[in-house]
Image (cartoon, rainbow, N blue to C red):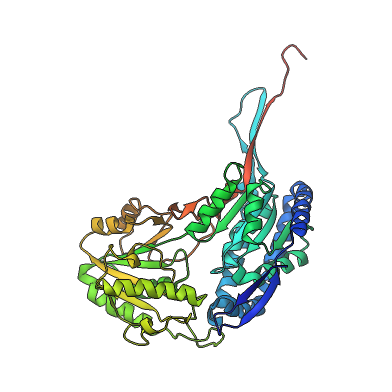
Length: 467
């Protein structure tokens, strides 16, 4: 039977191995999900909320082992592992709290002799394909609202973070979610493709790379299966002339380097008003140099390895190409020397200056602890540069002028506009993107719209000629 192994970025050893689900077990799981979903959808929303609340709380109760497992599976320092659990709880509890209002019928204006309303019904079976970089946060965005809406969920977690899927299954079972309603499976890419091509699920929510998203969409083509895609990003930040430099530098450094830069909504390029450029660069470099690269299981480490040596080498190639084109690194190139570390997942944070949009590091997703910084002379120039991208997930504006931020934000081609913060998902707002970042919505009441179908009711209350 084929297996999937987790090779830890900590030291390159094999951390865990799991067998791929057999085709027969996959068939049984899909059948059980269909059966379980019927009773789950018919259950009281209050009962579903109680079970989903218990599910979220059970996950959080496993915080200590999960934080340690995350460090070994994908390299996030244990110092920060608890933050993902807190975010998981915040999003999960919020989506539970708004379920009743989000799923409530839409009642039409009164019309004598008629009742008219639009109900929200579950889609049926939702396949959630979760990534390794935020393995709990991305999963909860779909799992909890899908369950609250009355769907059954099959989870296929990334091969690098298989243990997260197992933890979620343990929590669901302990919370009393009925058999078949939530199922974690270790699936091959071929099995996922077949499930989609055969129309075996009613929706797939995928988070991952653009190319993988295209593969998902092609596999589901012609089946009318709903497809939600959260894909790549090349998120910009703009530091206006009225920004608080120290505050902006700290926030942008966090947005660029947290999780070793492996965040779809991490800051990868910065545009700074020319009058602040030198001072901002000094502050940003100080923030970057304050990070401690090392073993993520060490409580003192503040930036861990990238997920694989291959991923780190991809970033190194982008850095080398930028350097050959005239860019200058201000941290890693002068300290450890990223040019000579090929084959290691450990990569220092890097800040590049003398960059432009002819360089891949400013136009293509880096997904590593690297940020390029360019000076600009006006809001208009900043907007032009920020929109010069195939991606559009989030953008941040660092300014003391909220009116200016609203005006600039209205002209940005992005899913979320931040002012004086970045790299954060507010569950009360829609998480969505434009261009190659994908399509669909998670979180907020609009997220429930993606996981339900509309059903209209038009009742004539009296029959003409009948008393």
